[in-house]
Each structure stands twice: as structure tokens, then as C-alpha cells.
Image (cartoon, rainbow, N blue to C red; front, side):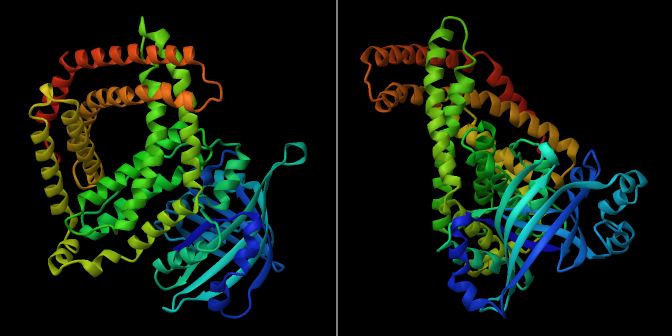
Length: 526
């Protein structure tokens, strides 16, 4: 299993990396300089890519080496993948040689044995890199290979050729603890602006070859094993959340993609919910808590304006539609400003340090140093009893908060909505430990309740933003048009009243009552 951390840096910052004191102090021997040419092969319909695999043949120092990478995960820049390689006589892969080294239980082995796949392999894209390699040894004795790659990925030919530049660092663990990768990365970050790289060169090449647009990354299925300890389950859950956060980094950094902002925010909320779920056993350091709050604030502002402009106002009809249209234009303008601020946040060294710090904390199991003996016993116990107890506690809390739901204030409804969301996240985290036929209806009824409460919460957020909108629009223009500001304020006042009346009607039309009754009647999966 290959474990490596990818970091991106600008071309102009390469001299700062080369001169970094850590490289001078920790490098064993002289740095190695290599010229590499990689040829990635796949079928015309990209079957290897569809199965999350990459097969390349690399020319380096007059030798040809084939490498197959498959499976694994990417979380917060940390790449863990299965890797098999060996020398070949030329630029063509040798699938027979690969077959002899791939584990029998690996799905990719069966795929490569299919004649239709073997016969259809062809070059899809190439990379040309100048690679500098430092072999590092940490004070703790860990061995890390630090690689600087500078070059280009190319696909197509003649007039259809496309290319993308590469300037990245790979820190690969050769021996020792994975947490040491993050120690090295954080040390480099103090002097060199770095960003996390969540896509391998193969993934970037496939995106280039297939002209694939960036897509928002939703939460991936999480598989927990009944034999896991509570601590192992916690690490798996947090890793799953961080995959969703880091997977949407490029989409948010682009400054325009609404869904990427939404999904990164969901990933962050899932992570914070998971941390709360295990808080009786371990605690995130206050400094990292503060950074999560900072990131949540940057994403939350963009998301709130997106929902107002693209959902809440877009749903209005009748007499309110005209007023809503005028407001939506101004709200979209404000959303673009907040998206730009969110983009600045995720490309900053602060975001990189936050993600690296979280991963280092997870990899080092740093919480164990401050745990009591009782907490350590509970962390090392099987996860299933903990999961059942957690779901029972979450359900009791939700039912307690929802007793007076039909006559609740907006603040009380908000607390019910948050409890429902935490209960749903916990159920989804632990879903693989219970029968699917019990989990699906329970989550479905939770989702229906969330939908009813979510619209009412959107109205509350809309009311706050609509009060702000005329003022922020005035602050952002050099020419103060009093009449335009007055019209916007009148539009906002009318729509606020309309939304309040609609929310009141929805709160008493029976749908929320029905969703609540259906949830209370649902059987807890545990």
C-alpha cells in the first residue's frame, strides 16, 4: 500500500522549496535528478479509470517500468492506494507480469484478465516530468521520500492536443508513522505557500483526456466492520468526511460552483457532527476547532446567499414573483462576492494548515495522550455497542426537543432541525453495522422531517439577508441611487412579509405534523 501526501506549489515558489532548511538538514545523500516520460493506457471507454485504476509505463534512465495503481482513498491530501510495478522491455504494458503480482482478491485483477480489456488498451495521455528526489530521515527515524515534479500532462494530437502544467510535491512514507508526513508538510508550509493536491496525475490526465468538467463530490459510502474498535470507526468516519471536504476544494477555489460550496459545507458539518458524537471519549484541540469554525463561516455565508437567490426567491410565484426577481439579481451579486471570499479561503495557507493539522491529529491518534484509563478502554472496545447507544441517545434527544414542535418558536424549530440532522448523520455513519431494511426507512423519515424544517429555516435566513440586502448593495456602489435603494427596500419588505405568511401557513397545514408523527413511529435501526 502506497501512502503519500500531495501538495501543489506555484512555479515561482520552487526556489524557496529547494532552499528550505528542512531539506538541507534531513536529506540523506545528494538529491537525485530524473527525467521521466510516462504513458498512461486504457480502453477507449476508459474502463480502468471507471474502476478507479491507473496503468502507466514509465521511461526513466533508459529503463521502462510499468505501474498499476488501484483502489484506496484520498483524504485531506493523503493518498493511500494499492500499487504494483515491475520492469518491462518497452513502452507496452505486460499484463501477464502484472497478473502474477496482483493479489487474488483484488477486483482489478479480474478486470485485466478480460480479453476485451487486454486487446483494447491504448495510450490515453502522457506526462513529461523533471523530478528532483530527496530522501529524508526525520529526528524520530521515519524515512520519507520528498519528490518535486515539474512538467506537463498532454493528451490528444495535432490540432486537438491539450495540456496542463504540473508543479507539485509528493511526500511518500517509506518507513515509519504516517503522521510524520504531516510534520514535514507543516514545516515546509511555514516558508512555502502550498495547497493540498487531492488528484493524482492519472486523475488529472483522465480529466484532460475526457474533457471532464469539475464535479461536486458528495459523501461516499462508508463501510464499517463489526470487528472495528470505537477508535477505528472514529478515524474511518472522520476520514470519510475529510474526503468530501478536500474533494470539493478545486470546485470552491474556482469561485463559481454552487454545488461544490454546498458539498464542502456538508462535509464540514458531517465532520463536526462526528466530533460531537465522540466528545465523551476524545476532544479536538481548541486551535483546530477555531479553524473549522472559520472555514464553516466562509462557506456558510456563500451558501446562505446561494439558497436565497437560487432557491427561496426562485420558488415564489404570483404577486411576489416580480419583487422576488428584482431581489434575486441583487442576491446573486452578493453570492458571487461571498463565493470569491470562500475561494480565497480554500486556496490560502491557512486552509492547507487546517487540513494538514486535522490529518496529523488523526494519524497520530493524538487524543490518547490526554485520555483517562476509562476513556481508553471505551475507545478500544467494539464499535457496535457504542453505535447502538449513540443512536438511542440521539433519538431520545430529538423526540424531547420535538414534543412541542407544532407550536414551537423559530428558535425551537431550529434546535429540532439540528437534532434531526445530527441523528441522520449518526445513522448514516453507522448504517453498515445494521440491516439495510431497517436503516433505509428510518433515514427516509428523518429526511422528510428535515425537508419540512429546512424550508422554515430557509425563511428565517432569508428574512435576515433581505434586511441586509439594500444596505450592502448601497455600500458596494460608488453612485448612491436613493430611489433604487428605496425600491429594493420595498421589494424586500414585501417578500419578507410574504415568506413569513407562507411559513406560518406551512407550519399549520399538517405536513410537518405528519412528518413528525411518521418519524416518531419509525423503528430505530439499532
